[in-house]
Length: 119
Picture (tube, one colour):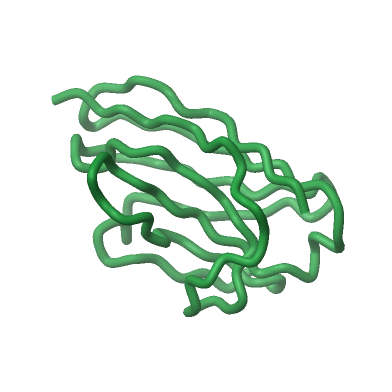
């Protein structure tokens, strides 16, 4: 599976962005997909996940602000980021994961997309 992330940018606190991840190869509709982020000096963390059937899971710090969704016809997983905070600044990546509550990535990482939130 190859993954290409896009949609990042520079936004003021309180603003919104929509990230997109295009997947190629494999059977996308069967995959559990996740969005991760890695801030400078910190470990990469899973922030949102969506099952093949559309069930979702979020890390507490983004609940109510981020929304993950998928379009199986387009082999795409989206992450809507609302009410952004400076602490959301990070490089965001998507990946195939082994389960809705399991953050083990299964595919090679893409290049990621940078999200920068100014205060």
